Length: 290
Image (tube, rainbow, N blue to C red; front, side, top):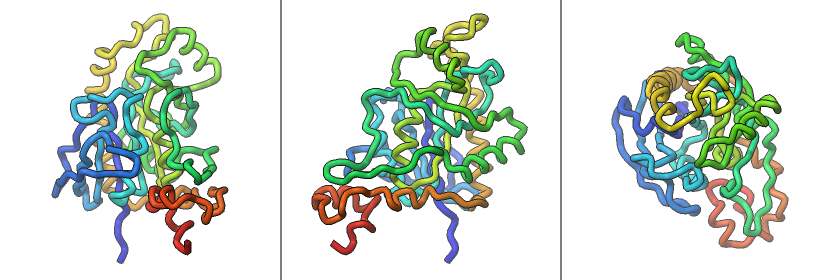
């Protein structure tokens, strides 16, 4: 029977709930990688099953460095999600990306320092391709939705993911501008890496809130200023998600759901039994005959 794919939404700063879902229920998930940021909200939106999780937890209690990204992504997979949209507040590094604009980055530059960014290890060596980290089908679907809404959208560009929780120095901000980066945030990585290892389509809907600290004619970024712009952006993000759900399944082809093919370097029989058990949902097909 044909069935619409399940759409996963990672809520960022300001997006902590999805009130418009029908037949809502919560799912408390236990994963081999610990506890997610909280319970998942599952419901129906325009006939599509949608799974929602605020990455920072209810009440925004987790800093970007404290989020258990592995548990969050694994939990989405446990609930059947193979297409994942990450909503993320970002600072603009370009004059033409104004606060309030939407950005769909297609590249990432990793400046994080202390995050778990892989499901593998402990006897299972995997190297997935990551040259094009964003699913082209999801990105095109988002772009089409935003264009139809008449929203200012910048498609493409590089998202610098910094560790945080402090904002950039002016020297850092100017350096990222010098290499041609478009926006800066604190959460897209390791989400994108883990989604690729979990063979999930992934795209980021980035909400520009400020000019970081590089813009001489603007005030330096602070949390209150970010929240003021976010309050306006979140309504747009909700509307985009709603329209996106109504258009599933999306047209186009990608390789995201097969990214582990050829990526396991370890001979399967040499992967320890405990590691095979831990990876059963993601890579069980490699161990089925053992």
